[in-house]
Image 1 (tube, rainbow, N blue to C red):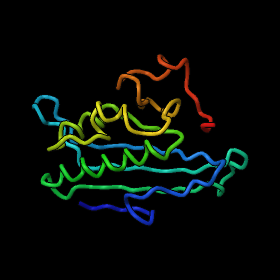
Image 2 (cartoon, rainbow, N blue to C red):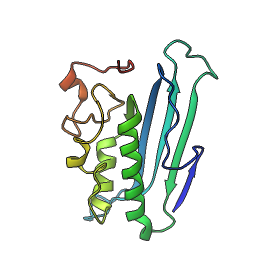
Image 3 (cartoon, rainbow, N blue to C red):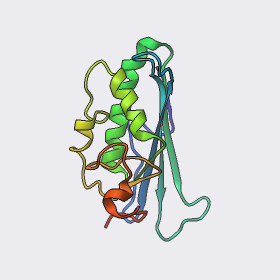
Length: 165
């Protein structure tokens, strides 16, 4: 598996000083074949991090970090699912705002491709483990404690874009 990152460790998270908002986005790409059972196979994922000061949001004042993982062949799909699981658990533990595009679908494809259950990407594990995770989801992603694939607005009355207090 090819992993690239500008963090000290691909499993790392950026330093988020007190008073800043650490935002994270995760995306998974997969081959789509809806006609075959097991035809949706993930081949890469990426996590981006942005640390913002609530007072000084100007170009050049925010920190940006990323990690991307790509399989070289289908034999590494299980490794990709395990790596994405670790990445998502770090996002849940450290991000004050989480964004994703079709995140519930991404997680379902990773779960189906994983040879063993992983707590970060499987529905039963996503709802339990992290620190306060309320009002952190944006961009059509899920929030722990809600039903994956539903709108967080339906459960919370709207999106929250402010840092947790």
